[in-house]
Length: 138
Image 1 (cartoon, one colour):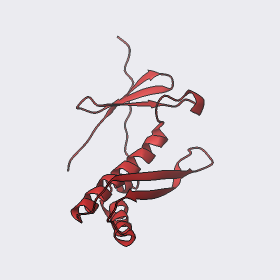
Image 2 (cartoon, one colour):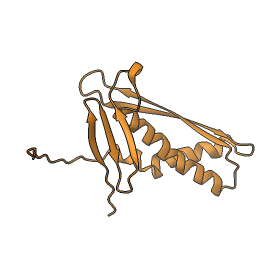
Image 3 (cartoon, one colour):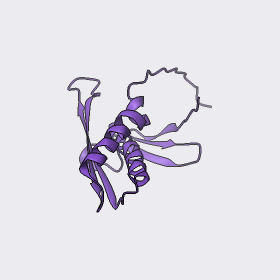
């Protein structure tokens, strides 16, 4: 079973960096919209879902020898009103720009991408385990 990991580190009260083993950094913040410099963790879930499904959809259309000039995915998440404000539903609108693709074939590709191949969509149903520890400053 393959594992992936990132390390999240606090930069300031509402700012974090997530770094993978290759050194790629994602900036994260929890500021109000007018002060935002990066996506929030909840926005990153939407970004991960949309981009994961996009990659598979593009690959499948290209396997069908269709021209992919552009692909846009508008991702929306509906959140619980209480705390925690988790997502209760997701909506993805896939827009393919192609001179030779057909609506029906693209709809099938999107369904396969989201329902079968998208690791992020499947991961949203996975159990979560955790541990904690306290270290003393040196």
